[in-house]
Image (cartoon, rainbow, N blue to C red; front, side, top):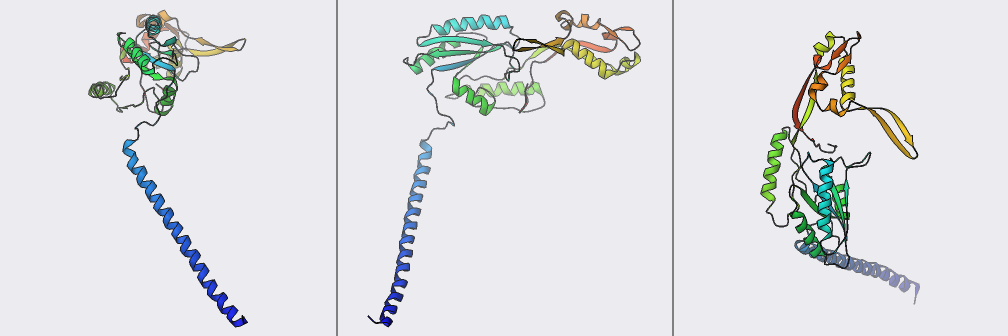
Length: 308
């Protein structure tokens, strides 16, 4: 083969081979696009058959029962009802153990009152899961005056992180008038209680409870030489308490709180007769510089992204 023919053949091959590579690459791209389109269409078609829950329904053997009584329930009453509920739950076939937690630890994130407690239940792994759950719910329905919520332990903790409460779905009502919010909450609860699948429905427990209101009168306080700010701090120390020190006992740190005795803090008449030292060394009854009344006020006010 002459050099001229060799160069001509080489030029033809250089033109044919890249064209063939481009055609093969183009065909592969078309096949990939078709496959991706088929996968996308299959995923869209499967959407109606998927579940509507963000979290799967775990099959745990540990349950948490959220028990809420009347806001004015005492710790002794919660212990009494909790003992009764625990006895009934132990009679459910498949329940291994029952324990109750009432109150809260120091610096706890659960700012609950003594009317709210948690009951922990452990069931047998070999028992009928759904049958035991129905037995637990049926046993709790027979306890009057309390609202219960039964959840798996892990699910309850996840829901609390996601929603801020122990419920799967939370309907929040926002507004300035507390009485209107309570009325609307009751109406919403009544309208959705018969919806299929709704269980353990409860509205937020907010009621008016008797509270002592101390309202300082600036003019009267100034007449006796009082500083309103200082007098307010003294009254707050008397009613709510002020930390004045700490006591160390082994590995525990115990705060020392200074405040008035329960008899003084719970009786407006006695509180009004309490003598306050004025800057002029006079003994002035608190009622002379403040209006002291027993009023009805909300037991708790919940705010978004804040405590109660």
